[in-house]
Image 1 (cartoon, rainbow, N blue to C red):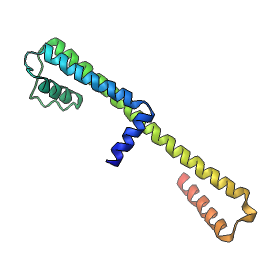
Image 2 (cartoon, helix red, strand yellow):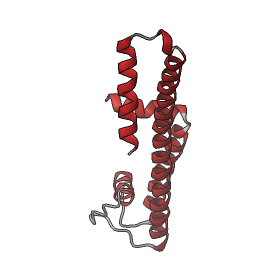
Image 3 (cartoon, rainbow, N blue to C red):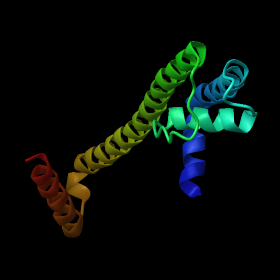
Image 4 (tube, rainbow, N blue to C red):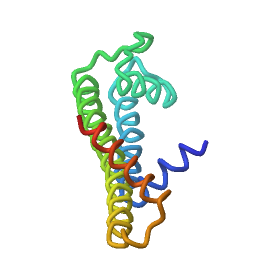
Amino acid sequence: MKKLKTLYRILKQTDGINIFASYMVFVFISALLILLVEPEITNYGDALWYCYAVISTAGFGDIVVHTLLAKLISVVVTIYSLLVIAILTGIVVNFYNEILELRRKETLSAFLDRLEKLPELSHEELVEMSERVHKFRLQKK
């Protein structure tokens, strides 16, 4: 649940929530259009289920569209779904990369502050700094 809240917070801060909300409206409208143009689908729940099968690319086969217009809507739903998933994934990954970069810069800044005060540091602090530099060099190899 905590990860879901974090994801929501990220999407809200980056306006990804607007992309997701408009996508959900698109899915509901697509289901309505499929219901209207496909005689085999007789209720809205089945139309939504069909859209889910198309979005997830699972293609369960329990509901199949036959009209050209319904097939075209299915193609548009699939393409739009892939684009939205790619965009939202990029937003989340970029957000986490920025957080990691900030942490790295803060750590580097603190390290440089300690270097400026080198003559004032205790023996233990100097040993700790030496170990951190050694670990950093091992990570870079």
